[in-house]
Every structure is written in structure tokens, then in C-alpha cells.
Length: 530
Image 1 (cartoon, rainbow, N blue to C red):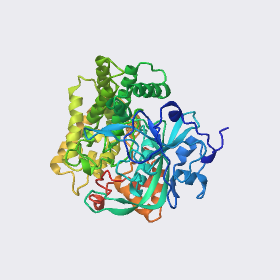
Image 2 (image 1 turned 90 degrees about the horizontal axis):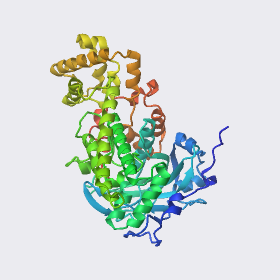
Image 3 (image 1 turned 60 degrees about the vertical axis):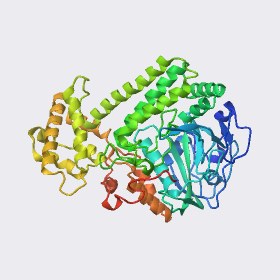
């Protein structure tokens, strides 16, 4: 018999990170440089009128928590207005490379970890408030978050989990009753926006930047202490730091394969936004490929250089791992071992990419020597970008193509794919001929593989989701929530619990981006302002 859910205020918090690593001796929460510490004890700053807007029932069930009533102490705690017994709120210290440049000390500028608890599976989980007020690491910011970014983080955290992608989670979304001043596009027109706080949940929020700051500031003792702690508690069974780094490389490679599989673009892959556990972390100006464009970035700050665009994410992850390797070099005095781990990243990604693309396309796994198969895959992405083609709809509909019609070169083979094209009249006659030629080769490969159509379609549909939280859908939920209506937010949460299922009742949420959303703020590109 399962244990009945408890109220948050009944939880026994056990804060291992705090107990195990040194704290900043100063209680001063004003922005400042911190040395020889992993964190600073930091109380959340109270808000005026907390209101629970959304609650993840699936995550709450995993944690063994009961949904709080509107005036429960739990809502006060999730808003930062009350510190419950056993909680020891702190902001973590870390640094990072931002857009390729060393930024020095960064740290939790608006995130405050409340404490750690054990979930129903015996897994330790940290509860962290994002937008809970200033910390010593806030620099010139106010430590707050706005509703639009908080809704986006809440939705995407849970969506990614149900897509089967390693991620931090989101338990609650609380409106603060206060406004926050933000210049959304850094164009000199700041506005008052409604504030909100997300409670994020993960086994650990340690990032690459936690180690970078210690090496950059010549704190080898604390570096070793942190490495030993992470290895012992999050990588049991590994005793050699070189093996540990190699495992981080493999986890990161697998994460990149997953991002690329569903068309997810993180938007700001700085080293301080890279999880040491291989989780998706920090949902800022992220986006999902709609029209296929390998160079697309959702981040307006990145619009010129496109460092963090869709197609470069695997390369950037590798670069970030080289920064982590540099930070760990004082403990891993073996350049060959570090290089081998980085080579392991490349191999893991290459093998994962090949398997993933085979599943997306319903094809047998090719051998490295199969040049025709490699050409077929490369040609696919050329065709997808020649006319605006929806990434998610194309791959989902590909499973519906009649293989026999494609083998015969019949025009009807294209019918299931037509919904994926954005422009009326697409594809053009020339493009249609190219697609039919590609589909014929694709069908030949499928028939040569000998897999049944039922098995193949099942494999494809388990890899290609029908539903994602498209930016324009998230923006509708944001606009409605700002007006006091959370129905769309709740509907998206339900939809994303089974994103690979057909769910006919949600077909209206599976379509292409409407034309009105092409350039609407929040629906196309976003800034880091939140």
C-alpha cells in the first residue's frame, strides 16, 4: 500500500549539500564576490499576495505531496513568504562562460534552494524557488521573475520529462501579486509585468560552472571536496575522477541527441546552464523548431552570431565540456584521459544520432560504410529547408506515408506530408519531384530492412511526438494566465503527459504555427529578460 500524500509542511527536510560543503560565513545578501564557499545562506524575499496558479500532479505524486489549498502554509513557502521547519534556504556559488567568454562569478542570482527531501522512490530531490528575490549573486538584478518566463519554464520542464528527456522538473507556479520591471527586448522600453515564482525540482542543480569558479579562483581544496561529494552522492560506483568526467561527457552527448530529436533549442547554452547530471536546466529563451532551419535560434541576444542555434548545439556542448575539463585538470593530471573522455562524447553522440535518426525515419540502422544511406539522410535536411516545413508534423506524418505508393513514385505518397508545409501551394512542382525521388529511396530502404509496417510505425511514433509546447501555445497560456484564466495552462499540462499518443481531443494543439504568431513577441524569438 502506498503512503498517502503529505502536506509540504509535514516533510522532513534533510539538506545534505548544506551539511557537506562550506557555507559563506557572511549573511550579507548584497551583491558581492564570495570566496571559499559553495553557497550563501539566503532567505527568500516575501511577496504581497501569493496565489497558486499551477501544480504538477505527476511530480507531486512522485514526491508524495498533497496539492495545497489556497491559504495553506505550503503556498506561503512556495512563494518565499515562509521558511518551513527543516528548510535551510541558500543560493549557490558558481561561475561560467557566457557566449564563449569567461564571465567570472555568476551564481544563483534569483534562485534559492529551500531544502532537500526524499521522494517515494528513495531519491533525494532539491526544491528550489526561481524568482524568490535577491542573493549575493544577483549582481545588478532584482532576483525576481516575470509571469511569462515562469509559465514557460513550468510548462517546458514538465513537457520535456514526459517526452523522455532528462530535465529538471517544476512542481508549482505561484503568482506573487507584485509587478516586476523588465525591458523585454532591451530596446529602452521597460514595462511593469506580473511576477511569478516556479518551484523547480531536481536531484541536484550543480552545474559545470560550480567547478569552473573554484579553479579560476585557485581554490583546489574546495574543488576536490565538491568533486568528491558529487561523485559519492550522484555517481555511486565511480571512484576515478577521469571515469566520472567520461560519464558526464556521455550523459551530455545523449542529452544533445534528445534535444535534436524533438527539435528543441535551448537558446543559451552557457557553461553555467549545463547540468553536471546531464539534465536540461534553466529554461530561458528556448524554442522549438517549427520551420526546419539548422541555424535558427530563439534567443534575440544570439540573433547575430547564432552561437546557440539548433544545428550547433552538439558542437557547443562539446566546447562546454572542454571548459569543464580545464576546470577539472588540477584533479585529473592526465591529459590523455581527458581527451579520451571528450572523444567519448563525440562517439556517443555520433552513435546516438544515427540510432535516433533511424528511428525517426523508420529505417534500419546503417553501417558506417553505407554511403547511400548517409546521403539519403543528408538530402533529407536539404529538402526540409528548401521550403518552410514543420519539423514536428513532418516526422510524425512520415509514418503515415504509404510505402508501396512511395516505391512506385505515385504522387499520392506525398499526401500525408502536405500538412507539414507552411506556404500555400507547397511543395512546388520541382520540390515535389525531389520529395518523391527521396521517398522512393526511403521506401526501398524500408522494404530491404524487412520490418513490418506495424512495427516500423510504432517505432517511429514512439520517437516522433505529435505534441510539443510550441511557443505560440505557451504564449496563449501566458496571456490567459495574466488575465486570471489558467484553463489553457492546465490543458497544455494534460496534453503533454502523453505527447506520443494521438489524443484526438487535442488535435487543435498539434497544428502548425498560425501566421499571426510568426512575429508576435514570445511566439517567435525571445530575449534573456525574465
